[in-house]
Length: 273
Image 1 (cartoon, one colour):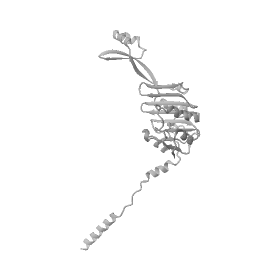
Image 2 (spheres, one colour; image 1 turned 135 degrees about the vertical axis):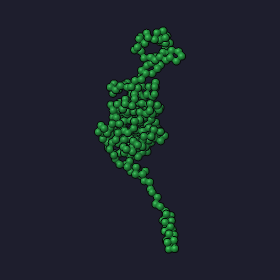
Image 3 (cartoon, one colour; image 1 turned 180 degrees about the vertical axis):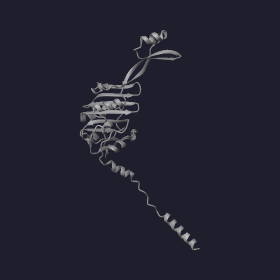
């Protein structure tokens, strides 16, 4: 009997213990990350394959923020700055203005920056160069590549390539471009009736005669000859190399022993451009 009452007493004790309100675990990961983002860290390489970045020669981050429309911003370090600005969905994307690099450069990155097809692109870059002398723009994103250089408020050089046949080029090639080759690709153009007749009459003679001509032959029911042309276009490697010669390549900053001071800035531009 005593054992029975003892068992009942233990059961009630356990029940009361389990009914006590448990202390809720406080998720402080967000607070921890916020605190970590305010700690000055060492410069790191730009960590992404794709992206948009701009370089300007200045040691005034706040002035850069004012010109690009970053009215409300927070201070942030390299690690969290790149991480926070990587979203490629523009309505939710942000811009990271880096700490001062080598006492003279600032890197601006993020998909919230204007795209080369935007009407405000030229004015955006020109305003930066009007204030800082020069502004260099670089884009690597899927099948779109772009380099642009503005000097003293004037867009001097612009190359944008998107997929096949969509190549826009403005301005005179810079000295840096003379030392770097673009990729080449054959693009098929219009049907040529005269060449088609020659090919049908004698394919062997045609091939010998036009061995230095870029053409394509299609035989689908009927034989047709199309003249082709070769265009040059900037790929990811080209953009990175031009970036290095115009200013610096953000993907190799740490490897090149670049230094930085202080924290960067982070926020959303106000779309005034």
